Image 1: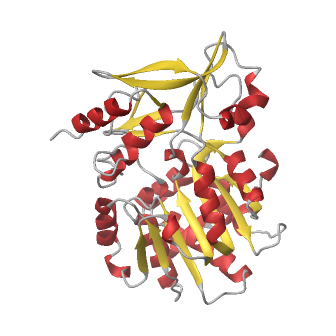
Image 2: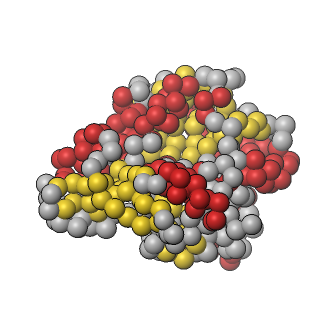
Length: 366
């Protein structure tokens, strides 16, 4: 059965709805959502991420995790928690590198979808003794270690808003034969709170996104992290750049077979819907829930600061293919400048220096 048809029926039952609710159902419905099926990564999928490019990305992340472990005093109860693990390649590359160094930490994966977990178990077959799966972060007990995500928060549902002659309005999705948009009042006062300092400069027709779902999730992370760090890789902006008047069409993107599709209503449940991350919000949430912000920079200087070229020599033959993959990870035309990393910590001094930020630490930009 075409997965879009039953999803459309469910959407009609809830119509009209905020775009955030529409995005949530399209991505996360347990039966018909985009992420309910096995991840669609790599050349045959809809998009690729850094772990798909080369194992050296995971080796570099593992190197930064080890430095955090050492600065915490090498605790025996240290664990790694990953959410949004995709097919499991980042976990595989981290565990392989740790094994190369003669180390092993328990690895927890938060994965709500059985099809995804099955694929991860297949990829991680050589490390099943180290890996434990949880359906949701709320199932985790308090832990010391690292909470890790790569392109997780960009998939959180967002509210769409638009500046009109009457002021700010929110986009609602009405579903009849097909979904279409209608403007209405703001569904949550927090939306206006987030954008109020910037909205006066927006021209009529300006459209952007506000993600409210990240706060309760981040609160759960902070509540469970006794000591250690939160490492976030994603694409996004500081809030001032995010809501700049020149970014008049927002950041919402739809991916289908490596193609950017402008219409988010074209194929509900069949394509990925994403929005850039407001990293200022993550910084503020860290401060609110007791995490020190240790560094914020682009992926390229972060990886280079960790010695990614040396690491490539440790884990590969340095073939032409390996070198080209490294370029994809660090050059501007690849992922090096579009993706950012933010590290927040508890149990480490705010002036802690991490190697990943030895070349560039732009916390002031947040």
